[in-house]
Image (cartoon, rainbow, N blue to C red; front, side):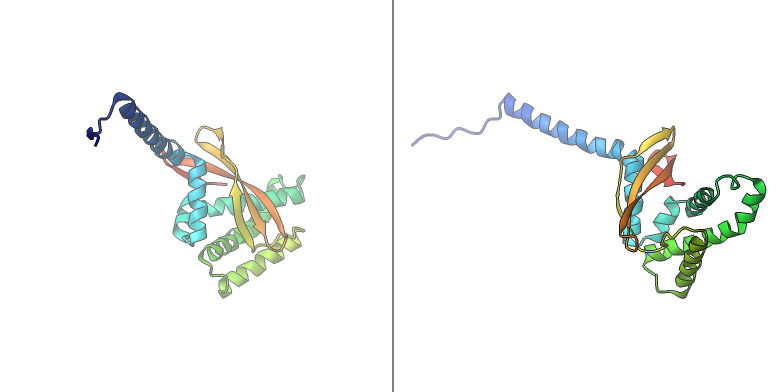
Length: 193
């Protein structure tokens, strides 16, 4: 019978364990100190909150009025780019823009909260659909689903853009949308456009 020798850790085993520990610590530090400060992480958290139905988190992290207002301006500019820049034309569109912002906020909140059966939501959806059709944009206001997002790219210090892809049931197509994010704190980014 062979006599057992106690397990002794030699320098190679200790070095390997130390390297493994340092790699795990570096990966954790990279996640918390680098990735969690990126607009990609913030956008993913906002989309996750939307899928959970957390209206408050989405409202805090996204400037819905600015997003809808910019979307409205973009649609109007595409409809009539030559006249859309004139101050009088901009002023004439302002009541419709305010209506679009109010109804858009109702649609966003209703979609996130899964409250699409309410009469307020139905009225807002009907109004927006009618306005879009009248302007020559047969874009459905409902039936959008988030699919994925690209890596964010910095446009200037404290600002970034992320392109997200949304699928629409009525269009049976995926549509890319570019979002503008602005840094509010070291770990906080908000969608501003």
